[in-house]
Length: 119
Ligand SMILES: [Zn+2]
Image (cartoon, rainbow, N blue to C red):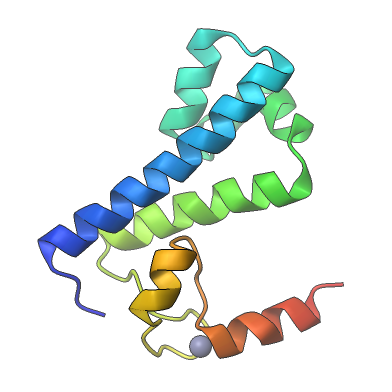
């Protein structure tokens, strides 16, 4: 999907907000220091080498960890202009779906398939 600049910004903001929401909720729960919290908000994946961050990531539930990673992947796809394309079939993901689940890498049909395959 070719997003215009405004749409690109919109989804980016949505994704960053969701990311912040998760990391903030978790840092409250686990009492993570401000410094580490900022680092995590910046880039969960890149900073995962540090043991502190690893501990933090381990303290997340699987669902939250998966969601954070999906958000990061979606942000990368926005930068590469690949956002909104289903990773499985290469078709456009509907805007309605992206508005509801901005981090999704799959169209609605493949999402169902992906879920079935998950043990
Ligand atoms: Zn698809």
